[in-house]
Image (tube, rainbow, N blue to C red; front, side, top):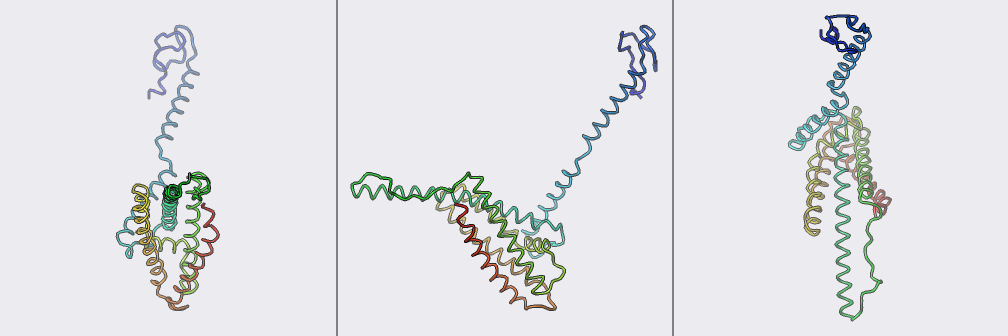
Amino acid sequence: MSETAGPSFCPNCGAKLKPNAKFCTNCGYDLTHFNARSQQQAAQQQSTQQRVSQPNPNVEAAKKYSTNYFSWLWESIKHPSKVDLKGNKFFGITSFIIAALLIGITGMVALYRIIKELTLLINDLSSAINDINGQTDGNGSSFPNYPTGSGFTIFLKIFLIALIFMALFVLVGWLTRRYLIGDEHETYLGFATRLAGYTNLSLIFLLLGMVFIALLNTLAGAFLLFLFVLLTTTVYSIGYSYTILEFKQARGLDKVHALLIALIADGILTMILSSIVGASVI
């Protein structure tokens, strides 16, 4: 109502106006254009407020996905064998990306800390030998080289390598389940979500390993990191085997034989990839 009633005072001379006046009786100012501009500005302001108050659909979709994912993640950690595997098909990929991120950060920190400790140890041994031989410290000692590139570059390399490893291992498992033991309805993303549901507990071990290698001294941190990596590998091996063996097959290769072929393929794949990318991190 207030938007269409017009101004109470003339915007030109300031004289008091009658309600819904079209002209100022004092100076003759034409109020019709002023009223039209006022209404247009009010409409634009209202439209802007509506756009601001309306939630962004992409943000809302991301919030909903993250909420559903972390609920699924927590349930899979508490009850791996009872988790709902018919949820969002991208949940598995999300878990493997998180795992690769944790591996990248842990690997970067561990690499720098271990090489630093080795450098200090070799320096101490070199100084002790020189003292025994009565020689001054020279430049002939061989010291470990720090990784080339920034910390982010090292993290990115390890992250991408871990992601490639996981993607290929999921591929081997999916091909085994779909073509060797005859699960015609299994998809790559479905297998990834199924496998992640059984192995999400490993994310806890990876997180603990990252924390301990960063906060504790190198020896204790490296020991605990090795322990958690071993637990992670064990959880992954159990989940990988369970994901293949759980299918009630009616045809195809025997499930145990198919699993053995998959494990052999994974072992060969690991050796090939390790030989290719092992030197790229340093």
